[in-house]
Length: 183
Ligand SMILES: Nc1ncnc2c1ncn2[C@@H]1O[C@H](COP(=O)(O)OP(=O)(O)OP(=O)(O)O)[C@@H](O)[C@H]1O
Ligand SMILES: [Mg+2]
Image (cartoon, rainbow, N blue to C red; front, side, top):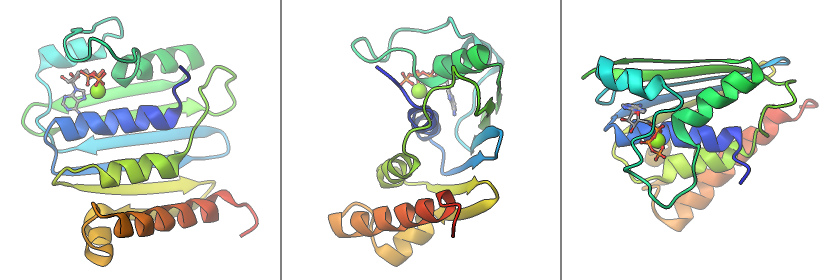
């Protein structure tokens, strides 16, 4: 299986959802040289003990998914940082929230493919959790932002196919604009 950076972003944001966050800020920035990502949530956070374990790339409680893909989530993050000479940090406070940040060198040959951010963004926005997800995305200085709550106000409940189609169009149009060097 070839997991992409966008799979990693989806998985880490899923962690924030699973931690009961009501607000998640996802920042995904590509500069000429670097890929910088920050995922900040106000979920339940981690105790020092759990944080220590979560930071250990060789730790897995093996409880949650006995049958599924391995190596996503935090282990994939730390392995990728290690393999490509990038940086990855987690800061967490119990009862307050968690911030995961990483910065990778885009030119490193061992960096996984970036993947499709529009798909990741739509998947996360359409995921049935009550909180807000605020995305800030930029490529080489061009940027857009998207707030799940604001989009739901305009498009209607993001669980029906019509509003999902509009959501997809909104994200894809924005992605196209920032990825196209000519506009
Ligand atoms: N944002 C977060 N808030 C609170 N706890 C977190 C957060 N992210 C990770 N954790 C803790 O770290 C553990 C490891 O996360 P990781 O994503 O590597 O595996 P997982 O979520 O348990 O399983 P999987 O990602 O395969 O579904 C989680 O089980 C959780 O206890
Ligand atoms: Mg996880």
